[in-house]
Length: 333
Ligand SMILES: Nc1nc2c(ncn2[C@@H]2O[C@H](COP(=O)(O)OP(=O)(O)OP(=O)(O)O)[C@@H](O)[C@H]2O)c(=O)[nH]1
Ligand SMILES: [Mg+2]
Image (cartoon, rainbow, N blue to C red; front, side, top):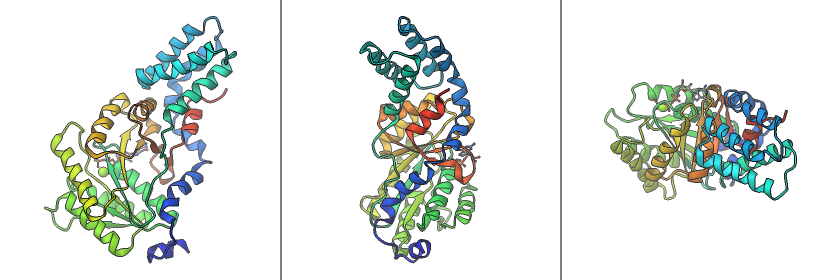
């Protein structure tokens, strides 16, 4: 009866804190979706297996250079590619790796290390409401991600309120309302055409607190990270939430379009500087051969990837597992 209990505000303590972990455990068996969703990036990296097929200890330096190039061509970024190649090089020199299979294993674990940043689960506080602010450039997949996430949280018995903070695009609130209906969440929309998004979020949070809602998720308009005014607006939204509830928002998630490639690093840097991100969501991985770029963002900004989007259905939002991601990109043949 968790659903009813949560809806009436009587769910037991700890529900919110557990949600992130529960979502991850449930998705652990969903490797196939991640595998399918990384098809294009994997194809791009197919050359790595060819390199290993001809690997010899004597010529390992050439292979490592070719490996670095292969990672760069799949958008891993020069710094990350070098870091990974160096980690493998160090282990070859230490005499730890003697076969191509061992070198491949070392490559994979170096990548898992790069992609593993502490705090990868959705982190919500013990007391409700947990507040999640979702930001990113235009069309990256923010609203879709919010809908999928709301669906998952409702499935775990949490009550969810969605704040239609995209007051810029006319159809945005309707799109979010569609997701709210499908997910069984409620929605808070602007009280007038002139209401600013920070004011809207402040009052949505007030409502969530009054109604005993477990999780408030705030949508925002897409904006370019180079547009100062719009970035400042985002900062205001964050402040408004914190003013109403100290500590809120508990999560500030940046949605990155998986087809963007390495330019996502600049986006992430700017958004992080202005609003202080707590995590990343990588969407549209299914349509991209450039998924490797996320490794650079995680590595250089030390931000955890929390979810990946590998398709348009609800089940296609997956809690991120570095191990699964790397296994999907470099399957053992
Ligand atoms: N294939 C695929 N499509 C996705 C994924 N996530 C989102 N999309 C699609 O990307 C398009 C844009 O998604 P939205 O959620 O509207 O993006 P947004 O960031 O809210 O866009 P704005 O509000 O205009 O900035 C939609 O057609 C989604 O269905 C994904 O993981 N895979
Ligand atoms: Mg949107």
